[in-house]
Length: 54
Image 1 (cartoon, rainbow, N blue to C red):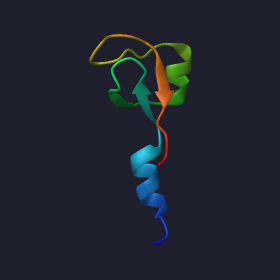
Image 2 (spheres, helix red, strand yellow; image 1 turned 120 degrees about the vertical axis):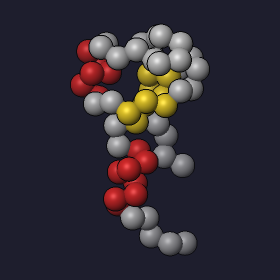
Image 3 (cartoon, rainbow, N blue to C red; image 1 turned 90 degrees about the horizontal axis):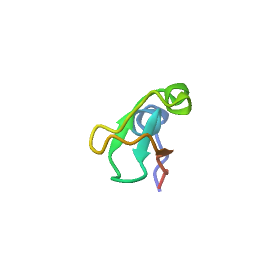
């Protein structure tokens, strides 16, 4: 199995969150998620989770 390139991992997973309701991905700083300033573009809710690395 090939080694994973750190630049590619950062590009795919850094600051990426997924809406818990509609599974839309959004890239935003974690501080804004925790303070509740970000809404989902698709459904308008504020519930997000971090993206899972496969």
